[in-house]
Length: 72
Image (cartoon, rainbow, N blue to C red; front, side, top):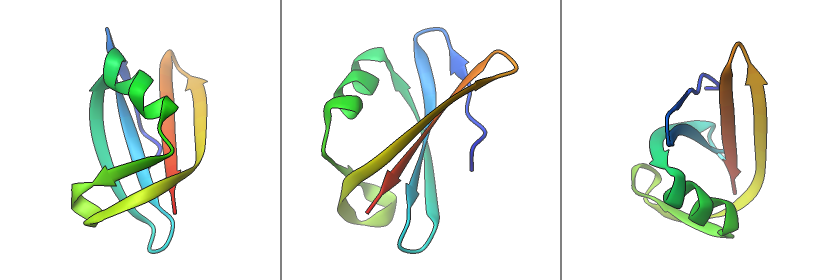
């Protein structure tokens, strides 16, 4: 769930739907990441729902940037 890596101008983001701990992993380029960070809600097709962004968690370890987005 928290394994994420940055690759050049893109980053893999893990969305976590807290209601049932379902996850979805996507690779976003910098413009998409900027839009996500400014969003209050996101549509995740795999969850079939428009969900509110509750929290984001960034981490850096072993030369990799990690981002988890918790949805409600």
